[in-house]
Image (cartoon, rainbow, N blue to C red; front, side, top):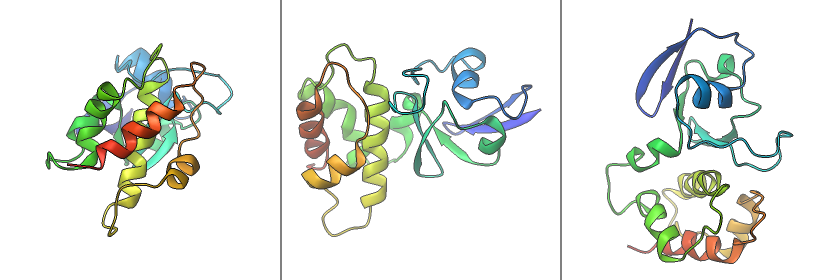
Length: 159
C-alpha cells in the first residue's frame, strides 16, 4: 500500500510504485480535473503541485509521491486561507479574462500559474512580469489563449 497526501486528504492505494500518479488520480481516486494531454511529458495538462513545485503527474510516480504534499486542481482553492492570496483569485481571473476556449489544458495552466505565485510569495512585488510568466508557463494550448492567460495571471495579483 502506498499512502498519498492529496488536497489535504490521506489516501491509500494498492498499485505498483512505478505507476504514474496521473492514472492514480484519475482512475483510482476519480480526481479527473488533472488531464492526460500529450502522452510524451511536454504539454503540462497534467500539472499538479508537489511540495510547492509544479510537476507533470504523467511522469511522476506514486512511489515518488509518497510522503509529499500534493495539490491538484480540485484542491487549488484550499491552498491558502487568505482570500487576498493571488492563488485564491486565479480561477475568477480566468473567468473574468475568458482565458479558456476549449478548456482542456486549463487545469494545468491554473496549476502552473499557482506554482508561479508560490515561487514569488514573499517578494516585494509578487505580481509576475511578462517575462516571469513567459518563463514559467510552458503549457501547450492548442486554442492559443496565451494572451488571455497572461492577463488573468496578472489580474490575480491585484486584490
